[in-house]
Image (cartoon, rainbow over all chains, first blue to last red; front, side, top):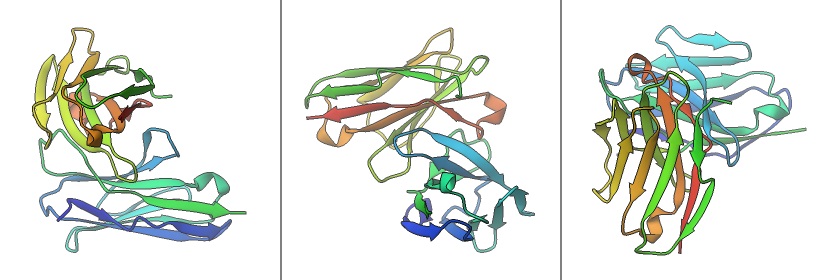
Length: 111
Length: 113
C-alpha cells in the first residue's frame, strides 16, 4: 500500500467552479501534512500546510481528518492560473527528515 | 524563485554509465534532500544531507550516493545507470528545524538510453 494515495484526475473544470481534491495516508503516526503545487515541467512549490483545525488561504481551504487519515483541498472560484498538479504530502513521523508525496492530481481550468 | 539551483538542466546517458548531478541550496539552508520524480508520479525521497553527513535515506540502492560540501551544496551520484533511472531529479533545501518546509530547485531531467 502506498504511503499517500490521491486520485490522479484529470479534473477539468470551468472558470469560477469549486473543485475538491482528496488524499489518504497510510501511517496513522504521520505528523505533518501539506499541499504542494507543481506546474508542468517545473518544481513543486509549497501551497499550504494542513492543520487539524483546518485552514484557509484566500480561495484555498485545507482540511485534515486524522481519524479517517484523510486530507482535502478545496479551491473556490477557480482561475485559469490554478491549472497545475496538486501534490498531497505527508511527513511520516516525528523526527523524520523526508516527505512522502502522492502521485498528484492534475487540474485544468477551462475558460 | 527559491534560490535553489541545479545543474545540468538536462542530461542524456546510456545504460551502465555514471552521472553526477549538482545542487546549490538556498542561502542559509544547511540541509539538502534529493528526490526522484518519474513521469506521472510524485517525487520519491532518495536521501538527505545535513552538515556533510547522510541524514536519512529512502528505498534506493547503494548505487545512488551523495555528498554535501562545507558550503552546503550537494551532489547526487548514480552508478551503473538503468533505463528506469530516467526521471526528474529534484534537490530541496531546508533548515533542520523546518525540514517540512522544503524549497525545491528546478530539477535535472535525466534520460537513460
